[in-house]
Amino acid sequence: MQLIEVKSKKGAKRFLNVARKLYKGDPNWVCPLDNDIEAIFDPVRNSYFKHGEATRWILEDKNGKAIGRVAVFINYKKALDFEQPTGGMGFFECVNNKEAAFKLFDTCKQWLAARKMEAMDGPINFGENDNFWGLHVDGFIPPSYGMNYNHNYYKDLFEAYGFTPYFEQVTNLLDVTKPFPERFWKIADWVSKKPGFTYEHFKISQADKYIKDLKKVYDEAWVYHEHFTPLDEEDIREGLKKAKPILEEEIIWFAYHDGEPIAFLVMFPDVNQIFKHFNGKLNLWNKLRFVYYKKRKAMTRTRITVMGVSPKFQRYGIESAIFKKLRWAFDRRLHYTEIELSWVGDFNPKMQALHEAVGGKFGKKHITYRKLFMEGAQPQKAGSIPLNNRPTDKK
Picture 1 (cartoon, helix red, strand yellow):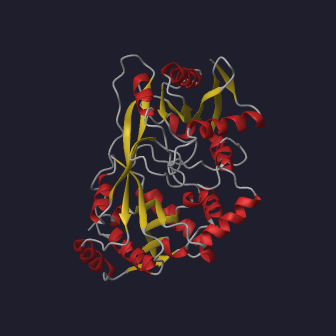
Picture 2 (tube, rainbow, N blue to C red; picture 1 turned 120 degrees about the horizontal axis):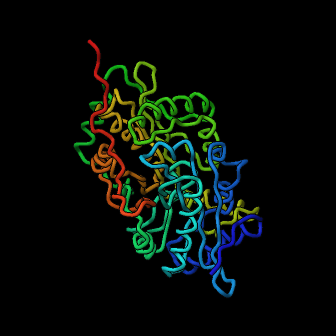
Picture 3 (spheres, one colour; picture 1 turned 45 degrees about the horizontal axis):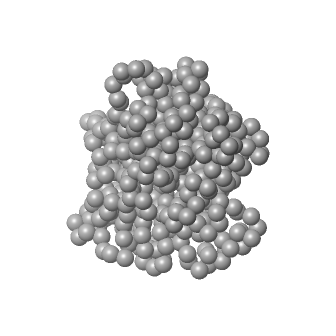
């Protein structure tokens, strides 16, 4: 076996095709768009290269056949914030062969160690954690857009190498054709009537305002998360631009108190229900097919990609009031039958409770693993977000 570093367009094409070959015939797999994957490794399109670096390899067998692939990267903004400097690996695909998998893992470890890293997380993304994050280990259903789908034997390969779970990520599913629990409605009605609180959905004509509001709330809400990094407005803007063909204003909501933003929920239709027909290619013909499938309402599922509530207003039930607004939006869009509540980490008990409160049912599980390079090092777990992180009001 030998490793070939990806340095050319031909190599990049082979890297993409490894996944197509390994999942050929799997009815649940949805091929990510080639352009989405390539954008991650393009310094022009991925802002993480401003404070990081990445490379990737293809693994060949003795006959020159591609049997695996992997990428490795360092986000220097976060790497040095951990107990030990920690890099990342991802986009791992491999035949069911321990020797092959270990060669890929070893290559990542050596690359990171040469850059003074002492651990690696994986499989993760060289970007935000709303896409391509965690190893799919349970609930092997078709993936929504940006979610990893993996062969079930990958878990054994990771754990045999010495990766241990750093945190678990559960995706729950909500059947919107069924009524929400009665207790939920009582809370939502009570919160909705409280004075000073207002709610409004996203409007593309005021995108700059909502981008600023989202950043303000996110940076306040997630500051208690381990190794928090503030959002970049330009990254949000690029994400909205990319999502514009499927964006629906009335399923993205913001909450305000006395005019100040205090909460948000971002949701998009699951475009993978269309992309599953394209085998990763978004050429002219498939763009025309996209318009056709969209008009035929082929997207029947939506995915919540991110939400947040400012600490001062957490445990007020603001999330319930926002879900009441979503109920109104879905009553006007009866072709949507399911919401994917993705994903909630085991470090986030408040969000786990919300998923349960609205009637979410288990859909699938991913695990983000960590491999410590020092022999005999004790496994680590991500720290939990405190249940009560509201600031104390000064009298």
